[in-house]
Length: 288
Image 1 (cartoon, one colour):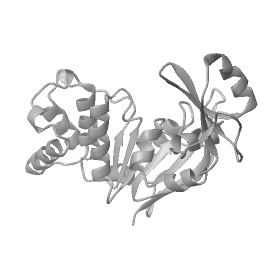
Image 2 (cartoon, helix red, strand yellow):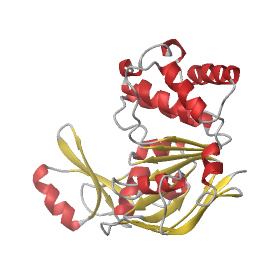
Image 3 (cartoon, helix red, strand yellow):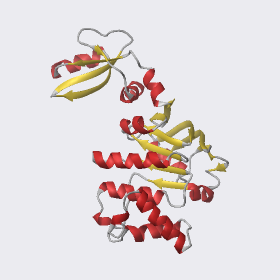
Image 4 (cartoon, helix red, strand yellow):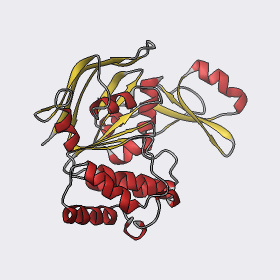
């Protein structure tokens, strides 16, 4: 089974921001979730793996391929969907995907035709392939992005913040597509949306300020908080006092009233009820 191994990876930009700090990660075949807030270093890590920028130190191996030294070999094995995926609005999806296929080195016209048709079917865009990309919805553009990332049967696919801005139906369709393609290849899903990781990924890492804080199976991390997460509905006036008096994980509004989740080994007091933790509780317990 192919795996991506990252060791001691660091990157500091010219403005002094240390985007990555001695990152160690082993990413197996399947869907891997890289979870963290905006500015955590996720995009820097993804761009480095995708051979788009150099680290200051460290190593990345994709199987037997040295990612930092064998960039051309990596690019033949890589599918990449960046956070900002631009398209030419006046070009049809079919013409654009054909162009990407040529750039990917698929020179035989019949092979390109067969692959392009297959990818349009797989991403549910076949009936829209003759339309100009400027007429595509956000969800259709994201699926087109996946189609171009799948050109050439890649062994590694990187998707950076893929569901931002999608409606619920578009998000579900997109995540189902990612899940279907991840069974035999390495797929890295970089996101700040906790539900994307909890629903899809068998392995994950949480990163913040350029450092990996936790790695492992989402369900194991959730089990580690069992019996320690408590919920209480309070008034808005009580929120500040509760923020000071408890290890506050999160606050949400239900019917206009704040509902807080707190972390405590013991019953925290009157009005609190024990609840089953979820990955969002894990996420905030690590970051807070």
